[in-house]
Length: 220
Image 1: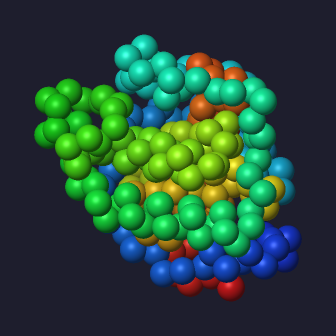
Image 2: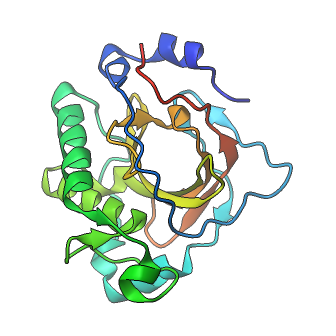
């Protein structure tokens, strides 16, 4: 069962309610996400996405992890959730906006001549997953635990596969996205949630294809 926007508003603390902002849509679809299994509704627990069964990793993610295993390694001693203070929220917003502005969005086909490749955008260009892993690297350098920052595969409202970065907090899951400059709760993205990196490193978990309501204007 989904979470209505009104229900979500009543539960969110003040720091998360201040996430409401005009969403600026860049509109670049990228990556390949498998459609969720038919008849799998997904489960919502509070303001966080609920994990399902084990899921198959993206082949390009697996290749990236072979080349750069440190970027995929998870320290189990780190917390799974970030305490969402004003300072943390400000840092998340700043990194999301700065990386979106700095990295030119380009498809892997145009960039590398392949359909899907994960890598850091060292030359200032990259597609959605490249942009999100750069955000994770910069947030980790700012002190956020990498274990609480998980890559996720979604299907956008246009039916395209897309990658975003989930920052899992004690106030719910927040989404960093190159399609939008606002940092939003997961259920305000309009995305269908397919799967995400697990907490243990080289594993992924299903998100069951739960659909988020579309809301692209100012929040409460």
